[in-house]
Length: 154
Length: 195
Image (tube, rainbow over all chains, first blue to last red; front, side, top):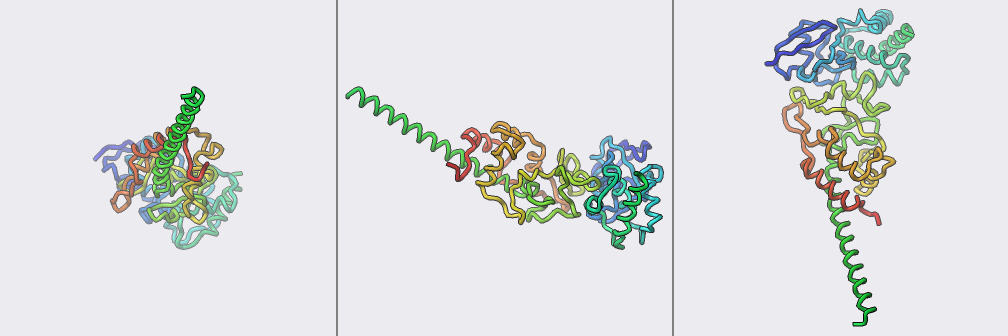
């Protein structure tokens, strides 16, 4: 077991865990932050996406030992983030969610996309969001909501 | 012996020795290149030297999962970068390989055709010795690249798969690979089929 000092949503947190423990487990099991979801566990579905050092990251495949001093930002912080707020508002306005399980990962990826590309094209959206799967197939509404958030942020 | 004849004989002998030496050097260089090529075309290397919009993975060189795409700089797109999963070192507890600056090789360094058929030894050799395609690396630069580049070094310490088994290694050790590159470059970096 090792002790790790983490920055989660701007707050210092400390955990004592096995070095190979995935960040997702730290968030959900140790810190009780269950907004980030477990989907596939192999980085194939995107449900566990958080921002690590500002980069959309699959928390299920990143061992805590490789996090280092990079800040972790999760879905719980998005309401206070200007881009996150715009995306969440657009999500509500376009009634994106069906079952909702994948949506925190979808929103984290959408925010990362809009942070980098403020006016994304359809191709930008399809490529950047291509690793976030939605079994309810809300993809069309996700694309509309990203474009609406983009306009809101312009 | 007539001094003129003696001089002519000496010149002929020296020329023959020189030609033999050059031929021997070229043969050694080509033999070294074959070793280098065997590594470059192993899955740990060639999976990221594709001619397509995506990397490959696995020993069967299948398309990378999760709809990963190349992106303009070879490191993915904003919300789906290589580093979205690949960290600076192998994550053996989760089975994800990693190394500093994980990215695809540029298209100028593709070593396969768009249908994933590996290019010939001659074509790969010509590509990596073409300074307009290889980031302007000369012979010593190629040796240094093979010796020090983190992602080249990763190929020889590729970590474990998610089931805990070790990934397949290239056919040479890193030391053997660098030594072969040295021998090939010292022989003038000959390419098969060149005259």
